[in-house]
Amino acid sequence: MAQTRVVLDESDRPKAEAIMTQTGIKTFSQLLSILLINYGDHLVSALKATPTPPPPPVQMGRSQGQQGQGKPSIQPSMQPSPKQFKPMSGL
Image (cartoon, rainbow, N blue to C red; front, side):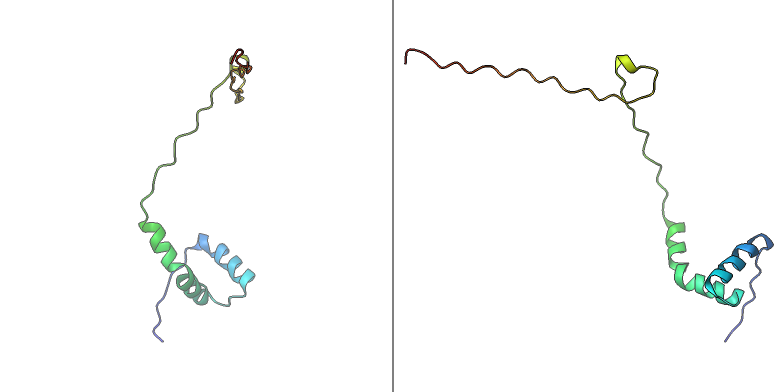
């Protein structure tokens, strides 16, 4: 088995040790190998993805009684009253 030395930044060591404690992984080498095998492809695709800007915020309309309060208002639509049916006389 070929060996490659990897230097772990001192600030990252507590995170690596916490993962090892919680998972039962014994060495930093095993940890790195497991991370590469399980998450390497996801990392590559995430880094290659073209970021898209978030959608613009939704603008909520305000009724005149609630202006300045920051609360959205839902107004029922006014439906015209149905016309009464009148039977035709004289037929």
